[in-house]
Length: 394
Image (cartoon, rainbow, N blue to C red):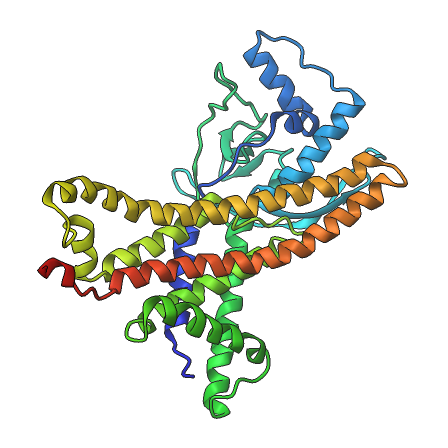
């Protein structure tokens, strides 16, 4: 087996594409959880939206329910820092353990500072005379004043001006880390091949069978011996990138990169662009003017076939996103259930279910990487397939 340097180039290209999309996906946070976690924001929101009506007072049960939702939300959503755990909440002096990430804003000039200035969303950050805050409802950064004034429209949406946010968020940081990890692993694998007569050493011994599997069981059967080599770089990159990201998503760091639809969209767009720009003439002929088909049917089927070229990568995007987000939601719900049960029997049962589901998620992490790679290979294979139109001569 000859290890090509092209996968390293595709690692950089793929991760750059993902980075360009990842900063624009901030799912809306749950308002009930926000009300419990940030009562002052909930009060301001209620006053703005209901004629200065008093904010509802949550009962102890509702507060615990909101805390559980906050726990699930923390694991699923992107953020400007890594929050590991907290302690001392019951004593009234809660301490957060984690580490901040760089905030990079463009607002009549470049503003760079660490997210620790926001104090987990409770403080206003000052930079070169400008003041910024994190919106508790959407996690986005807004301009404000020194007092942290927030304005809302009639629907409760924050109307403060937003600067251009180019920050290194949690998802972006993990994409960079995984990219460096892949680069080091496969650069080392390539060097060991050269030094040891095409024999892998170290960590390469574990990854070499996976590389061979992608080549022999995915690329060659679906693309063909003649054309598979030019797609191997992308297929290897996408397989290990999705797999590594899925595995990191099972850690307590609250990482959910493949559960971010912007990331899966970037990967699907890459697959679509490669399919489109490497497709042969036969591929487009079978889309716009199918041989052996009556002309009226050609006119009807052409737009349907063209739409199918877009639906295929769209299904790639939704499949990976939906499977990963669903698994994380169920797993986090079971973990939260252990606290809600608060019973000698209920907590162990919830723990057992969470443990079994975690094992299942480990398998799903690899399975989703395989499915994404397999379908991408199928699309590439259809783009370079050589057709023999015997039926057109009858």
